[in-house]
Image (tube, rainbow over the protein chains, first blue to last red):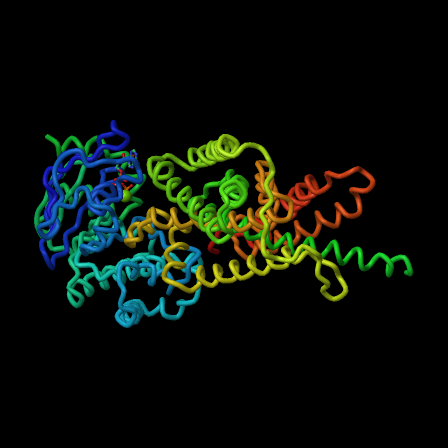
Length: 263
Length: 301
Ligand SMILES: Nc1ncnc2c1ncn2[C@@H]1O[C@H](COP(=O)(O)OP(=O)(O)OP(=O)(O)O)[C@@H](O)[C@H]1O
Ligand SMILES: [Mg+2]
């Protein structure tokens, strides 16, 4: 469904961030892209969604294909219409719009009001806390509610493929569990294919069927979720770390980890 | 007491005509507010938009002998084209370069419009004759200029219509989404460029309405651009991002400057109108930095 062939991304003409990335997301699947801070995960998703232009980034090599279309040079709006929706890192709801207006904004590419209404109700079914807050400005929602809204808003474009950028970021473990359950459910019931970017490898590998590990703009390891869970490196550097305060701990081990994977 | 009663009609007359002008300030400020909301860019050319839109109408009638309707169409048309060109030639290439670049571009645009006007039509002031009675009309024993009443009503209709559109429609939600977060708006499939163009075109259209009113009341020339200087106090008072705020700011600036001019000008020989709005603005900044209706940054607790 989605294929990245040898993709290279450069920011501001000089900063090489993605260095020949190849990845595939099969229809109906949940694929996870794991990696530490600065590995290039968000950049990869932005490249797929056509968002690099706004940040002076550029796909300089390779191709991104979606259902037979080459989408390298499409505008974000065209890509949404093809059926790809991105839930951005850090949620980024429209703060000054109400919950419901956020959902309506998500349906911008659609015309049929009756269907849009039905989908809003569907989102409220998946995320009941949102229904109670429908008239509240989204800036006042809790972090968990905002994450639900960001996912619900992405659903409103009726995507075939949903790109999720670290949905677990800053959420309590209970809530992370709940969000991931819903992602799995959406994949099952609404037939949404998912590309899930995460630092929380333990959680991501419970719902994903396949995973890629991104280091410094390159895929250093990939395999089925089960094989990644059993991999010694992944255990040590991702699964282990995800239980400790990952961000600070990780930096200490950065050098060692790179060495092991690149050699 | 007696003195106060004698003063009352004069006071009310100043107040009412000030409020009427204030509605037009609010209308012109609407363009400014929309651009700021959508792109956080400050349009330093808003006064020049008023000047240029108004003068195209004035010149079409006086110098080119066209009818009022045709001249109005040309005036609005010119500003629509300028708004579209602004998006196409300035904003689009500057995407991702930060807002300062756009602000500088508006300063450039202001100079270009002034230069263009002088180059094409020269410096003479031209009146815009409107089919509206010249003599003041009496409203509740107060004498006011009819054109000011008409202008205020048009402004009100426009502002109300726009607020409604802004709140309810699909277009309004998209525009507010763009204002809230441009990048994420793109993720919703909203073509941000269309909405930027829309804000610039609207700014040009409302400015032209103002320009025609002023052209009728005091004549159109390069100095009409000075109205741009009133827009800053208006929007600072009301909050840079709020349409109702612009209305309130416009009314306050219009009323206060007119009252001040009425009472102080006779002693100082004029000029009060030019600085009183700024005194107001500075006071407002000290008391309410976000203006009356400005969006505060949402902080969750
Ligand atoms: N607009 C930009 N201009 C220049 N460099 C950038 C830009 N955006 C990101 N980068 C750089 O690209 C690299 C990858 O960034 P990216 O945001 O893709 O990482 P990430 O894997 O998503 O990290 P995190 O887990 O912290 O979100 C980083 O080194 C970052 O500094
Ligand atoms: Mg990221």
